[in-house]
Length: 266
Image (tube, rainbow, N blue to C red; front, side, top):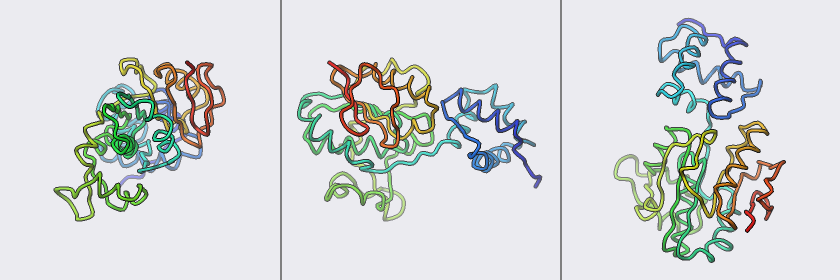
């Protein structure tokens, strides 16, 4: 098996492709990770070098191979009841004033734990009409989210009784595999969205979750995205960001509420 080497030029080209296509900012410290992950793709597709593979990708930005490239570089880490302050805020401060209708966007839903948690919160609160749009750039992650099957060990952080209430044994797979209940699935629609591209067609929302994805963006890209997200909120709507994602330039339409929680002015 021939040895493959990611040259400095190769790495700069990968950085440019990732930055320009989906906003991912790859620092010098990510070189080894990029080399390791992409080497598998280079070999799988029969290219003789990283440079040959990168040239191939550069002219196929909307093909399956480019989607595979993005999926390989992104880390789709998620979890149920992650950063629970936001879900508690929904239950205490948002749901009581939206009893008849609410639209929520999970803007970087990864493998689906976040939108499924939101749906469980809504059902637990007895909401009549909750519509959740869940999007991600990774097709692989979205496929897992749509399938909605998780090992029982991933459910341990949920409130007491929720794993039994909102999950059932998966029809296929090991005994520990749990499937999201149909009542939870019914509230969510999944679709691929690149946050660097237009999402005006999604309409407006009462709540937007955009958590733990902006850590991959440069500050300018982050600021521009927050402006565009704020534009998709109705007056009085809420934006939740990751607790590690500090907004240095808050849009004039947003007010700080509490850590990683902002509200659009009325």
